[in-house]
Every structure is written in C-alpha cells, then in structure tokens.
Amino acid sequence: MSINWLRFVSPSLKKPPLFHLCHLPPPPPSSSAVIVAMSYDKELAAAKKAASLAARLCQKVQKALLQSDVQSKNDKSPVTVADYGSQALVSFVLQQEFPDNFSLVAEEDSKDLRKDGGQEIVERITKLVNDSLTIDGSYNVTLSTEDVLKAIDNGRSEGGSQGRHWVLDPIDGTKGFLRGDQYAIALALLDGGKVVLGVLACPNLPLTSLSDAGQHSPNNKVGCLFFAVVGGGTYMQPLDGSSAVKVQVSAVENPEEASFFESYEAAHSMHDLSSLIAQKLGVKAPPVRIDSQAKYGALSRGDGAIYLRLPHKGYREKIWDHAAGCIVVSVIHLPTFLRGCKMQTDS
Image 1: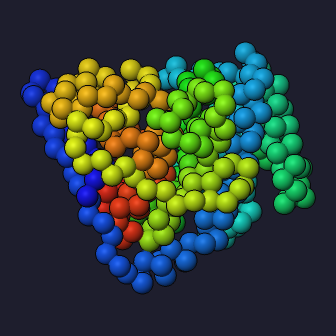
Image 2 (image 1 turned 90 degrees about the horizontal axis):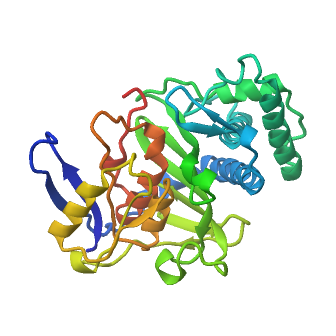
C-alpha cells in the first residue's frame, strides 16, 4: 500500500486545516474490468491520435513563438495560437471519428478571434491546423478559416451527467508553454458523468523520471503520452509512437521519504500552506514545482508520491483542469474505482 493522495479539507481559511493521507488498496482480480476497457478501444485510439496531433502543432509553435501569437483573455490569462489550433484539431478529429455522438466541453471559444483585427491570427491558426492534417494524411481535407472557428466553438457543449462528453484543455499550463517549460494537452471522456478515459500529451516531459536526471537535462529525451481507460491501467509511450509501457505509482509508504508535486505558479496554489502540510507530515524533500497536468503523468509513473493543489479562496477549478489527469492516476490503483473521478460537466 503506497501513498498516493493527500486529501485536504479546510472549512475556512481562518481555521487550522485538516488533512489526512488516503490509501487506495491494490485492485482485486476481475475479468469484468477487461470487458469495460475494451468497450472504449475506438475512443482511446481517436483520443491518442487527436492529442498527438495537437502536441505536434504545439511543439511547432513553441519552437518559434512570435509575440503576435500571444493574446490575453478577459481574465488576463494568456492564450496562444497553439491553444486555439490544438482545440480546433482535437475537435475536428473527434467529430470525424464520432459524427453521430459528438459533444465537447473545452476551454476556448472563437469570440475574441472574430473581433476586428483578428483575421491575421485566424489565418495563422488555420494554416497550422491544415499543415498538421496534411502531415498526418488521415483526412483528405483543407479547412477554411470559418471551418476552424466552428471547430473551436464545437467545444461549447454544456455537457451534463447523461451521455458521453469529451473534456479538453487544449494547452493546460499556458504560462509554462510560454516559458518553454511543461504543459499538457489534456483530453478525457465522460460517460454518464464518470471519467472513463484520459489522455495526457506532455511534449516537454522527460521519458525518464524527473528524479533521475532533472527535467531540464539536455541529454534527456522528452515527449510523453499517458493514457488510461477504466479497467485497463495506465500506460506511457513516447510521442513519436514507440511502444507503450505500463506505469506504476510510487511504492513509498513513509511520508518522510516521499516527494510531492505542486503548481509552479503561486497563483494556482497556496505554496505556504503546502509547505505547512508537508512539514506536518514529516516530508523532507523540497517540492517539485512543474506546470500543468504533466504532474499527474509524472505521479502515475512514480516520480513523486503526493500532489498538492490548494487553490486560493475564490478560485473555481474547471473540469478540464483535472479530468484527464484524475483517471491517469486513479485507474492504476483500482481499475473499477470511479468515485474519485466522478465529475459533472454542469457543475
């Protein structure tokens, strides 16, 4: 039994926090779990394809990021041509694969792109999307600027607890993306309000453990694709499509030997409170701070034992911030475990 979550409860920021470690037992043998996993084979293949295409687009943009490629949303958070291009690509691929049953809840929309002066950036996004589709070769199509804008806006589904809904963060960790650090394309599938499938494409995450060589080692090969289906475990493979390997969380049982992840940006999580909790638990290692749901991927393969995310008062988490990462970690421990990954897209 290993440390895998730190559950945090704080009724009020004025009161001392309550916290405890939650252990998940190893999965019981079950043949039914395999049957459940097989029922999402087509969805998993489509999700991996969509996320991989989006990752390649994002890599291309990050290598030669132009100042004009970065915009600011109404909440002052940054958004890039890669965010929009990634969402358009994923939306297009999923709609092509599931034309009769397609619902997407995603972070971006085309409102700002349709404003006066937005034509140039829309044309750049369209070119990036079409170049990606041409290189892939699966779809013999050239999208117009309006096609791309509609694909982006197809992510405005209201979701709900009934039926199937895809959930997408086209670039989770945009600030990390802009710094040249970690980010992730995070795609999940909800079926009946439960997360049943998740894919994390992490273009800058090393293929080896962060604890082995450090995330910025020039000799470290980077680019990971994590994927999980309920009942099927979690796997990691290089973004180049090489063979996948099954991953396992840390076996650390003693908090003093554990390392923990937290958000790089102090605006995303209360670092002081994280430090206090770690101190109370007896954790001796300093926190590993990286951007995005890449933390979930690193956690799933045992790079760390705990992930602390303690949002500031008033901050509301979005479903696309955790849906894919949630199942990538939780499905390892208990294939039939869904309660911790139950999310409703209308909440």
